Image (cartoon, rainbow, N blue to C red; front, side, top):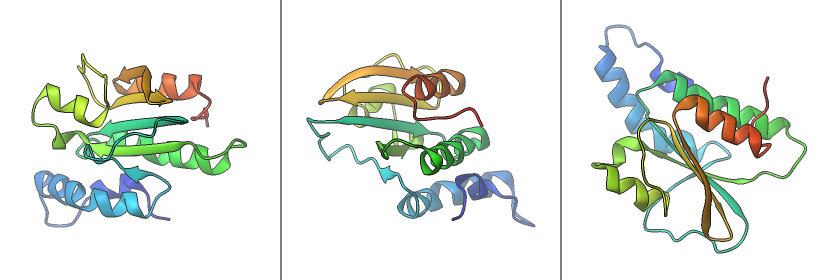
Length: 145
């Protein structure tokens, strides 16, 4: 299985901005090959169960690495696979657009951004790499390896 972090792999003769554009365009295809779902704001969130929605910057290697780490944790986890949806924060043209992807969220200051939805309601949110990772650990979704 290919890794999200490989999306930004250096391509000989290409500029960093070209690599970032390619990563953005290849991100949806990579999500389809993963255990995650691509979050579409037009699709309502289920009113039952727990859902994790994570917005990452496809131009940021540490954030793509978070998805690799999360996928590995889920593959090796003892509990069932939680519902994890992901999206590219570049699909948000202004701060208000984050609410379209994660209903009820506000105050987004850094990426990545995450919302935890339980039975249709936002019960937790985080932004910034360390905060998102800590939240995923609190919910026993991300391990420390």
